[in-house]
Length: 201
Image (cartoon, rainbow, N blue to C red; front, side, top):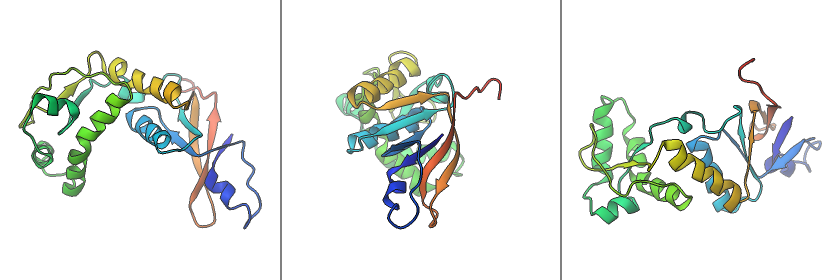
């Protein structure tokens, strides 16, 4: 099955019409935290038809089984506790933990947006313990913990938010195979396999 983005339709006047099985505003590959964050952001920013494709029969990938410890600065929870911390200090801790093998500018960008990411998850139903703790490698209390397992506290609520609040669609057992590109190299769609069986393939 070929799934098209609106970009493919936009080129119809200049080249033969693409024959799509389905057309979406946004196609997200993967139903883990990164994919669901992208899908929710697309919906929040006005994209009407958004689909998340997951190759497995269950959702979430590694995110569904992760421990769920989030380091973040300046979230609504850290502000409530009056924690004194900075993105610069967080970025320095990350650099120290990985022996300086990180990209400093990108690390600082992650640190500066970490609190906003927690707030975004809470806005979409994620449940964290109100008490922020300090763990090894951190120079200040900034670790956010889900009230239950990561999947139950974070992933299940954001799947529900995407489906119910934003009327988004998640399809499992749909495996991404390749991108479809136009003459300029821009991605206009994807080729996927439905009813994918990970165990046997």
